[in-house]
Image (cartoon, rainbow, N blue to C red; front, top):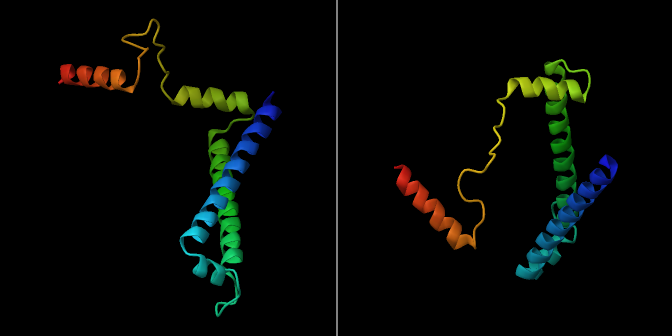
Length: 128
């Protein structure tokens, strides 16, 4: 189950990345086609705009993944945990326990956003 979830979330993240980058390129091309076509050819800078953008995206991705990995590894080592269960227990002992809301205090179902906002604004004005 864990592998399926990981593959699914990785696929969604990859598709989102490709969609976002592709739509940004398409919007730039639609907004100023002459400058976009000039950026696709090698000019005085020695490198075209698309390859420069891809290189920057690649480096940014590597830096982000390495940064998160180093921070995660550092927290793991500082905690002194041997496995994930041990790490979870140590983190649980550090952070406060989240209280359950059984039974729920207040409304939990709303007809729409207007009903929700009216409920929130009414509660807020009563608390002041």
